[in-house]
Figure 1 (cartoon, rainbow, N blue to C red):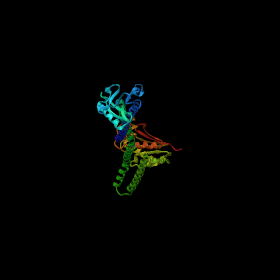
Figure 2 (tube, helix red, strand yellow; figure 1 turned 180 degrees about the vertical axis):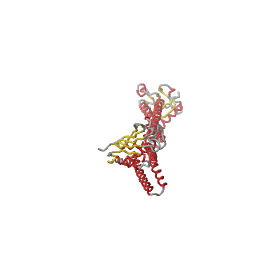
Figure 3 (cartoon, rainbow, N blue to C red; figure 1 turned 90 degrees about the vertical axis):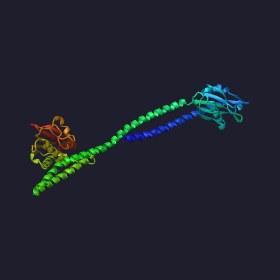
Length: 401
């Protein structure tokens, strides 16, 4: 996209620069032609014939003559076979075109019978633009005033313009490439963010569904007893709630849905969530009645992740886990080795799992989801040391008073 943006801009600038260069060249040529043509026509009116004699005295005092770079008068000479004689040359004869060039100018004046403008090199090699205006002797052209001006100055100015245009176009293409890179990056960022959110959603879905699916498999493999059927139904209900919560979270993160906070009993939600865990026998819950504003599915998911994280990283299988519900606070304590102080913020990042100073196996989504849920409820999530060893995970929420 950056290359396309820069190349398109560059092509447009090249077209514009080409048009500008051609317009400038034509404008300079037209201005130069107008200048020498007007000077030649004005000087042709300052001289005249009287009884076949050409009077050139006014040229000595005429400002137009004094300001001309090259000036000469061509006079018809019948005895020369069509070539005119050259008179009143300024500054020197070498500044005029060669004899062939002078003859060509003279023939053009005779054919056109008006001021003509041509390009011809001087005898000294200079490139000049010439204008010749006829001087009438009765009903015929008896002479012509020839005025020349150098092309070098106009061409130098034109070359300066071309260089500035080339430099400016190059700078603009570089700026266009930089802006194109910035805009393309900004345009791609939402798509990349969407892909990242999809990957996160898939990882978190796998994290949430792995445990109940494994438990459901064990229940089904145990047999056809009534208790197994009840347990399977309970797990299916839990899976349904998990899927609903995952879809709701995906919509919230995509910005197509807003979280709806309702008054709920936090203590009852925690107790129900813990009872649905497959290994809830090792978990003890101490709760007092607490009412908060929250989303029940998201809070249940956060509590479940805290407890499962404590069971997974809080020591050997079956190690006790204590859950406490106090006003605006849910704490989960384990008796494991804990998390080093330097890693306690890092474990809340996506892709990082809790463990004893090292990254453990898993998707690393559990604690990240907890912090995300806490922030949605204007709360916080953090890890602290437990008295006597172990780790305490805190989920703080706003209590409804």
